[in-house]
Image 1 (cartoon, rainbow, N blue to C red):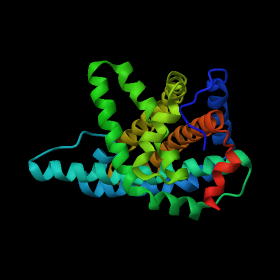
Image 2: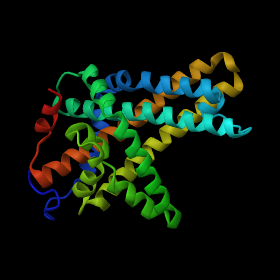
Image 3: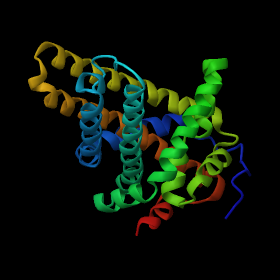
Length: 261
């Protein structure tokens, strides 16, 4: 394998191409994206709702703390949300490659690979979140830059099965391309954030106006919005990873997906 740090400055990342292709793959495959992600997202919302209440789980109200037990329940909720989020993103990353190549979708294989890497996936997400948060304390740009450094840990984890070494792989692959990666993530992140805010707004409107009888409807609607947002972000991350592997190691997308076969 070629050294991932041997960056060729003559090959651009192609921010515009990655962003446009991310939207193209998403819009062509909305139903497969929904099949892959809506159920685990909805399960995460339901589990969270049973623990801290559905208005808080849906973002319609702030969680209320009445002592140490409440705090522990909230932490437990965050853990469950991370687990379901990790399964969704890892599955969508794999789906993105099959969609790009026009291959049949293998939902069971995506779920198996996502579950097999769930422990390092969740731990790495927590570590990256802490690193981004610490960097953001100083200023917002360093926080986002650190996120760019570790933005492709999930593709590295799922494709290469390197466990906790995925953080090192992301560092190596993004080296020399971190600002273009940052720009790509930022543009995609704005669109995903708009979808997430719309999901919370609609869910809050339904739960606040029509009462608890439509909580499930609100959760389903929010899961659909989140599905599209996560799908867009995951596809972009998958394409960034594939592009960096191609630039630095000469590994094509069709070679990447042989790991699933």
